[in-house]
Length: 278
Image 1 (cartoon, one colour):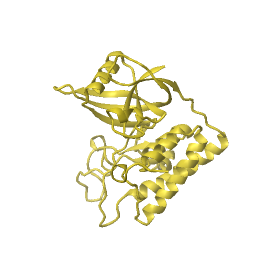
Image 2 (cartoon, helix red, strand yellow; image 1 turned 30 degrees about the vertical axis):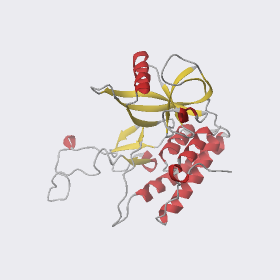
Image 3 (cartoon, helix red, strand yellow; image 1 turned 180 degrees about the vertical axis):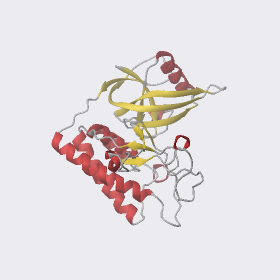
Image 4 (cartoon, one colour; image 1 turned 60 degrees about the vertical axis):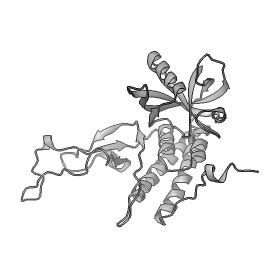
């Protein structure tokens, strides 16, 4: 199939939402085409060079199809988009097209689990370690940290407890959407210490449920972990869910090791040190 390409200095993983500000004329044309035809485009990592110009044609061979979830057009013709990664594709070849943007002949890549039993075991281990990773990302007393803006498209639910006061069964595999809703209602309390705000008027906590599907989880974690672009691209390119989960688990353990010691991996800036030479 033919797919318009949007080369970027980022890696989009399936299930991850990405805001885009589109100002370049060629990509405005791409967005107009996709909106008019209700069709997706492909996001692919630039191997080297810039997002536009000759360097932009040096692309990685595997990318992710992006579907437009929301689009706003400014008075000067620029677009503000929210796109979501859906399926992976492999570039067969760039095609000649009477359009200002790149178009490629691509193959949709199948999602192969590998050994199902191993994938299930890795899913459980990765989920538990990911919860630890999220906890360690929280700043300690006296620390400041940059806000991590990662958007995902997965199931959410209201954080209601059962009538008997017991938490929901999926409590252990959920984390708060703290940026969207407060953990506690700021309303006044009664003398007894309970919230006096009527239940219907209280803001509800919502939780993003960590999916238990091994393939969905593998892509979600690959997109959320704060890792270098080459590592994220390598995860995207892996052939099976089993391989990706094993690699993700190794990376989570590395990040936990660094976070517990309040260390960060050194990531050289290619714009400063230049391309690596063999």
